[in-house]
Length: 232
Length: 238
Image 1 (cartoon, rainbow over the protein chains, first blue to last red):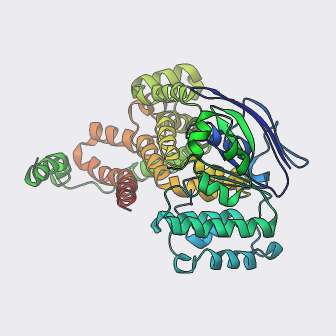
Image 2 (cartoon, chains in turn cyan, blue):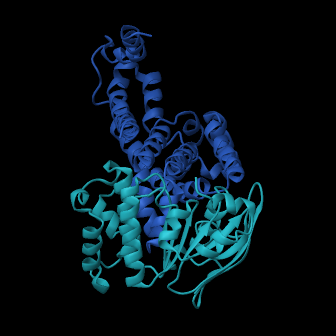
Image 3 (cartoon, rainbow over the protein chains, first blue to last red):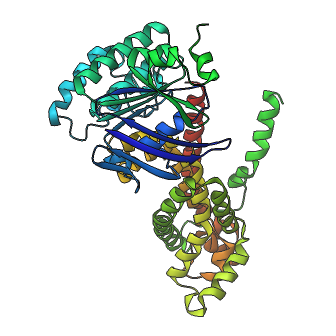
């Protein structure tokens, strides 16, 4: 179970939300660009500190006090793949395996490598691969550690539809297999609907609606949400 | 400016090196004190660099990751040490540390540290600022503690910048003359020995020491800068 109550001042408004996601559930954070979704995710991951509130994963308090990043069982992926440019692809994927062979780590990495089609670039320097390839490597690197909580911040932005479909299918498959709790930020309903049965809608740093996509579409809580869900 | 102009500019810039071939008479290769001066300069400057790196690196790490407003203040303080005129630094150090401090190896090293550490820290801060904090966050979330993050991510990405910073500090310390003249006339390092030889014995006694001086001061910073420029060029075109 992920429970978070986050208050964080930003330039134009204050993010003030309470979020609860059941263990193993896949939940989307949906809203217009600049609504504060990424701030919420960064605060849960530990990349930013909330001004006030708490973040807990099961019986583990992530904040406060702020748990050191290296002790958090959290995978965090943003639009930027953030690969380590001085390492090769293989070294990036294995970076989180402090003991490569532990818990069948290498066998699991081999599966990720095959499923994400990393064979051709496995020995390539990370700074020399394309943006789409980098995103696949970043997913493999994040999942190699088998995190209990996975946070995805618009991880498919800028990718072509074919690759998005492929990556969505892989993440859905692994979420079912590993049972991690999944929180995904996106401003495209089509992406979130594929991966998350439930969505929390954020507007100007506040939760304005929380429910299934069907509920959101039939009774949107705000005019802006209705616009975001309306077909083009 | 066309290539010919740039070439002309470079030739004028490097023209002082022609002085090495000036007809000053037979060089005195066995001038007394030359080897001692080389030894004093190299050993004590190396010791000063150990201190500069040990004290300067944590400071650079703190400053580079401080909030922007706070960072400006720290960089302002570091700039004071960089901008302090060497003679003034020597006099102030002598006054601050007292008479017992003067003309000792300790005074030599301390003066070098004061003269060079600002250059190292400011250079190291610039090197660290080139490492995106998001990479360090990722490394942390992948199970690496801050020490491991520094050695496996931060330092490898910033190491050329660190090398440039250290080479600047090295050349600044090794060539320090004004401040050392006040605080540590003895033991005489190369700059002081060159000056005293010039005053006492003329140019033939100075030239061999001058060559050693240039060979120990120039290549390391030159190489570090060239490599750093090449890396920056490669990154821009990747």
